[in-house]
Amino acid sequence: MSQTVGDFIVARLHAWGVTRCYGYSGDGINGVMAGLRRAEHGPRLIQPRHEELASFMAAAHAKFTGTPGVAIATSGPGAIHLLNGLYDAKKDHVPAVAIVGQQARMSLGTDYQQEIDLISLYKDVASNYIHMIADPRQARHLVDQAMRIATAKRAVTAIIVPSDIQDAPMEEPPAAHGATFSGIGYSAPVATPREADLDAAAKILDEGKRVAILAGAGVKDAVDEVLALADTLGAGLAKAILAKTMIPDDVDYVTGTVGLLGTEPSADMMAGCDTLLMVGTRFPYAEFLPADDQARGVQIDIDAEALGLRYPTEVNLAGDAKATLAELNRRVARKTDRDWQNKLIEKTRDWWNTLAERAQIAADPVNPQALFAELSRQMPDHVMLTCDVGSATNWYARHLKIRRGMIGSVSGGLASMGNGVPYLTAAKLAHPDRPGVAMIGDGAMQMSGNQALLTIAKYWREWANPTAIVLVLNNRDLNQVTWEQRVMEGDPKFETSQDLPDFAYDQYAQLLGLTGLRIESPDQIEGVWREAFAADRPVVINAYTDAEVAPLPPHISFEQAKSFMSSMAKGDPESAHIVRESFRQMWAKWRS
Image (tube, rainbow, N blue to C red; front, side):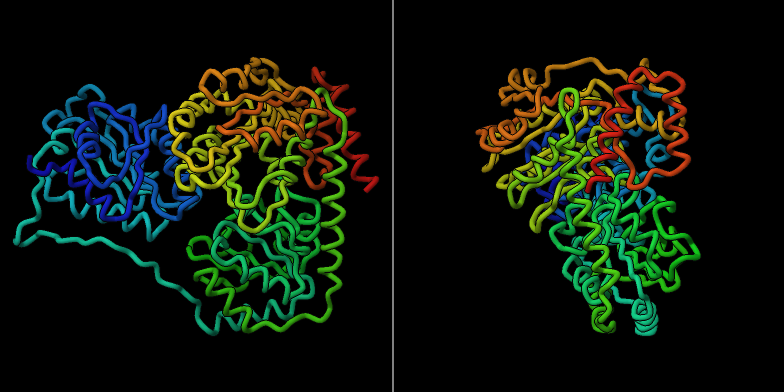
């Protein structure tokens, strides 16, 4: 049989180093599926339960491997379902390639069944590159362009493939005018700013008396360099949420995460600094940065469009974080006055003590902070961590004390629910010898996590290390949004929109052939975590937690306090319980 366009696409992905694709079949993509079936050397198709889960897995693949994630779906509804995970990749600036089916060329423009204008639909999410293969001779350069641009720009690209083209005989471009002969391969350059700009940045950092550093996901390959610079400058080092697992928390001057999910020492550092260095971050919340006339600013980012975006930085360094930080380390002088850094170290130690005390506060039935505090104590070296979006993100951001060698991620820029289980699954497929833990609220679990567990049940027996733990915070509440209603809107909990049904997540796991464990009281926490890490298969922990343990911000503003009291005065159904639990947390802070 001669090679089809579908066969060629699959072979070309393999030539680009793609080992796995994440997708779901349908008649609009069957020609590519046939190519995957016939391929002797891969890539392998991983089949989730829904196209959205496939695109989340592709995004996670990029995050946990550094290579483009490839998502495949049929035309119409399949293409639509891919969008959420693709936007997750776009917003977190990781490479992903979508290969999407379309109706046959002769039917296009007739409102045919499942015909959608996919170019228009995808022109935002794949704004860097989207094209349709209308001729077999385009297949070579369209695949090459999609892969190269996704890799080079850390972006989402898309190829639309009509069904008749997929089954058509493959043709190479002719030796004629207008033909293009593309090739594979890309090696990223190491971009370094101009010497004069580096000198200017070093001068600002040298002159600063109270230097704060905020690092984001762009610091992934420059951790040693940013730690060395913080040490030299006597600075504190805060982390945006995507850098949570990149920078270890056992370094004294690492103050933890920043923002609404952040720590008190990070907030105090931002409020008191006179110099701010931002590295590889587009942290969006200006209210958690220094006032715009408070500090002199320097920013490093590989994307020039990110420079000066969130803070009026004086010197903007467009370049690779590792190389640029190395140049700054060569230029700055070691500060002899360590008073600023020592105060931050003391505040950070006090903060960890405060968190430990908050985790011990009694709740009804279980304080969620206690679950994360115990996980922090038990999680092994080289663990992979994924966290869904919701109140779980608060406890993940604060209570887990990260050590070197651990990796993890969240849906940062998009902040989409439903990422936790597919992220964990993709991480385990990429690193089957490493243990993994996903932390998920019951809202996200009911939204799509239960379906995603089926994919774990399908593939886990292939993993050298079967440890894959899904912690479900079962509080029967869309908890993060409930607290936003109270604190941001000043409204009581709207039970109709917020209450969730109970679900036996542990028993459901057992139906799938996994291990199901349950936590209903604080004295079970330590033992259940030990049992989960020792299990011979993936585990779901159904943890019944108290929804009224407030995810307190680092500092409570007057407006937040006013809105909170307003929500209580308007008759929140849990007002007495909330006030009691909030007082206990604040008391833990005052005692420490």
